[in-house]
Amino acid sequence: MSACPEPRAAGAAPAELTDRDWQRGPFLIVTRHDYRTLRKVNLHHYADQLRSHGKVRFFSVGFSYLSRLNMDARVPLWARSNQVENIDGVDCYLWRTAGHPINLRARVFDGLAASLFASYARRAPALLCEWAANSRYILIESGLPIIFFESIKRANPTARIAYFASDDLDAIGCSPALRVELDRTIGRYDWVFSPSRRLAAKFSAHVPGYCLPYGVEPGGLAAAPSPYEGGVNAVTAGSTLFDPSFFAVAAEAFPHITFHLLGCGAKAVGLQRTNVRVYPEVPFESVLNFFRHAEFGIAPYDPRGLDPYFAESSQKLAYMGILGVPAVCPEAAVGSYPGRFGYVPGDPASIAEAIRRALASGHFSGQPALSWAEVTARLLAPKAYPDTRV
Image (cartoon, rainbow, N blue to C red):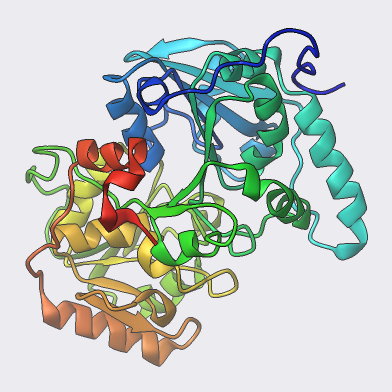
């Protein structure tokens, strides 16, 4: 049984939407994030801006008892899952199940994995179909949400559906079953959006692609008191491809630097020491303040999944650049951006040299950024903004 019923054969075909129709919603975002978490990504900011255009709904998937093992940022919402909650005008639903499909990491299990993903998609709650049927513009994020494309399309054949490529599926270790599903359906999306021009271009043979940069809130970059107690401070945030080995090297080589790890997930557990402080999730605005007052920031990406598009798509690197904070990152993530100092992962001498260069450089004039309202305008009318095209 599919998540959404088959459309009725009889009756007139639904009317096509005009641009004005779908640009005023309702809007549906299907993602592995939740609108209510302290961690904020671009989709949260789009939701905030879209509220002024129409109804916004945030449907979060891939949440189960397995999520507790990797310190998922949504775990504090456990008791609020499987029910609709309206927060600041956004309808939120976190779908919690006993388990959810993951990458089984061995080709011999590919067939089983495909079956598990298909079963999970079929079990989606009726609410997803209801929200899809009552939406005019739907964003489906990369990763697990792509398996719901067929159900969503069935529920609403005339909605505009965009694929939001936050990441490349292979780079973040998704199951091959998801790659097969994306390859099968990508040509039926209306657009592809990504914070990386390079990543959006990968789909250009199948669907129009657009690059949407990270934005800022008016006044959102204003300085607040330093969260540090003095001394020399470095900071990182987030758990995507987090490489704990960086800090084993850096903390020993630079005992006078205090390293602050914000919301870095299960892999950061055990790194705590005299000059390494591990924090749970902190509000997005606080993350920016930690960045602003640090001597330098760090994007400690694991090289096993690192792709050159990370230079464009990394949220922490983007905000370090906007704030004018030197950034230490793997060489593959440096790109052509100023203020980034690359190292070879696993090479202690290279890591030490990158840190020394970052410390010597000091803060610089931040890169200009669009407001989130300006970025969302491009989400709603991508053809009208030549700077978004790839």
